Length: 326
Ligand code: PCA
Image (cartoon, rainbow, N blue to C red; front, side, top):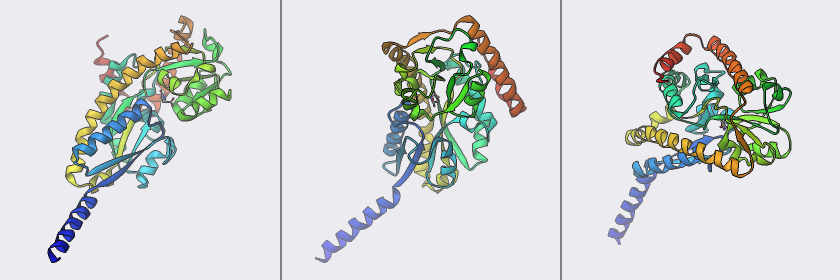
């Protein structure tokens, strides 16, 4: 009897010990769990859970369920989640350097985007750190193209159209195009199209596919304007409070999650353009007058951005352009 009680007590202590060793971290995102970003986060969570021997469990809070996209950094700082995922250009107001990947026509393909990230990362990391956040990794959306409900031959065709935007940088781009910005969260785009609230938008092919926009937006111009990245970050204080082995596992797995995410993005870029075509969307390159005009607007946007960022813009763009092979 005594022996049994002792054994029970020992088992109880062991279980209690395990329970203490398991941390559950909330990862808040404004995007869907089914999207390639969400799937990458879930794969990362599984990897961390396994590699930490169950010591760190990551729970994805998708669809803005914990906080709307724009409020996620604040939610993490306030301890409502330990980690968050945001679109980095959405931070450009408070962290101008984070807006480098929404300067149009700087990156033409994934290799460019990767090079830009190489030079942007060392500048963005301290900006996160200054806010008590640790940047873990970043994954790009496929290239941003122009959707429209009608054919677009020149920028004049966009004048006065209601253009869906997703943050301050896209609002400025809509203004430069002479369109009327209409703010719509990514997860609400499908509804906005069905309800006829938008005539045009600049986003990726994959976002058009996920929101099944083909009944309203039947034209997609592959302008490859920029590759915005989602950044995944943790609260620095929460990181410090993790037992060292779990913390090291988490940090060591971040570059792998980043590499998997970039590969998934490339794949999603290819698949989703095919999917748009299959649903009858006309996928085209922009006509030369449109392309030329867009480039000019891109230059104007770049000048405004450089003025806002100051010398740090050189710290990205000089090495970026000097390492270009084409
Ligand atoms: N999709 C997201 C951000 C960029 C993208 O391709 C959106 O449209 O909100």
